Image (tube, rainbow, N blue to C red; front, side, top):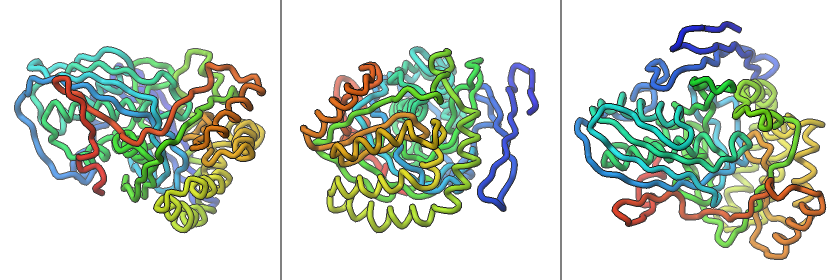
Length: 404
């Protein structure tokens, strides 16, 4: 591991990637300052047609974007730090990010609220790509449940990008914003020292954050199918496991250990079982979505919980995944239609349309002496992100977000 000590260059971490027993290479995880042009990709790299924006519209908008549960990655061998993709399954929940964005004449980036490093970097990305001569004032607030599987980083990026795109008169289509987020996904370093680290992205956060509902995505940030889950309540539960002890030590991210997990055991297991996972999605998940069968959707997801990279993600929380699987199995026995762990966890979720099942889940968690602060009662968000301009709120679903 080599460290750069200049103000503009951060720590470099060499990580060995193991995709299978016969696939071993090394990648570099390098910290960078917001706006570092080495970490701003070209239009050609992202597969977006070039365009510019050479004036300032003096308007201000507000954005509200729901959080995501990332239920599964289909194949972690199909993405890397500079190659978004891998496919996935996700759902939008009524926990929100809020951003207020204003275009200004001065070529400055002024941020307030939370996650200023991420917001500043994406403002630089917009200015660089568009040749935009003006600046931005951006105030953003996340849901404050960071690095536990609730998409705090991608939700921040999504709210900031939508806001800037709106105040500039939508120079980008929605699917293009998704690619910009995918190729520039990042989060703060563990030291919180003013540097960012590149991150993995499947596109799920942007897809459900904007469109709402339940989504299946394929590789290269492509949305395959989306359905609404009407009248579906959600119980979000963050278990106390050893893997989140950093949360209580003031650390806001476990980026290095997460990267090692995704680039090693998770990839190795997907190399063996991604075909089985894809078959379950194609033959079980998608037909159930088309029929609106919540139980069958949950049956397919339950099978996926024990396969490939999701199994590796659950196992990282100790005892071969027991701290996670005990809750997933308990929820199934209670009668929950859909349950699983979000992203690398440890957040476990239960989605149900049955009031008695919902009540039994809460009673079960109470019997386990779970602190109320670790339980979120909410619902599936089927509307997606909204913007408010001049006091009028409207949805994004009329935009071209479903393309590509």
